[in-house]
Length: 270
Image 1 (cartoon, helix red, strand yellow):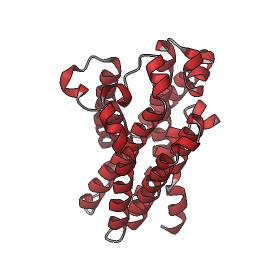
Image 2 (spheres, helix red, strand yellow):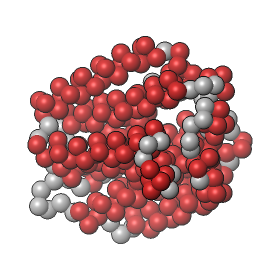
Image 3 (tube, rainbow, N blue to C red):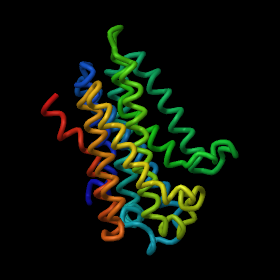
Image 4 (cartoon, rainbow, N blue to C red):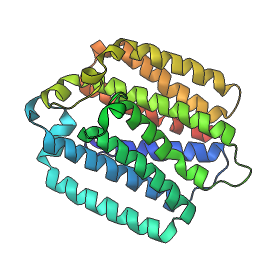
């Protein structure tokens, strides 16, 4: 529970997938690059959590992590400043020009996501559940350093479909979490799939099952470690969603995060 309260789950997951993609596509990722990614993801998630805590209007009916963020906002702000500062130092010291430009592309996607969060993005973007954009940004943000470090032998024909499928599973995860936490979102007037695209809720379990079938099938064709990890995550999500009524919201959230550490089960065999 503590990694979730401190927003450490997201950077741990991001770095684990970065390591798996790097191993599968034979791309060296120095520890400095891994630290840059982890600190960058941590900074974004801390900022997002603090924003949610700042705008929350019904703390007693909010999630445990939101109550924690509200209570310990000053400490989290200090962590945010420290993480962002250290990340900036690492970028200035170790990031190549190519990596910086790729990172700016990811930063643009993050900015678009926050436009959705702030409700100032226009009707076109509001047709897309913000959870889908969140999942896609997380997936591409987790592995963009792989493409930025690649040479002419890079297998882009496999990398991009794998990243897109990973993004779909991340999006399904975000959608499921929003459906489980809809009471908190409603209490704090926070738009989510439950209020903007409620008609999608009955299909989420089927979507995760379909994604697990697709990823397992692809694991027999190419880049087995990556697609197998995607399968493990999506299949686990499917099981969790089918038994969600037997579990608390907190347990569901922790399990939904835990299944995305599936690269740790695959990496020893790469």
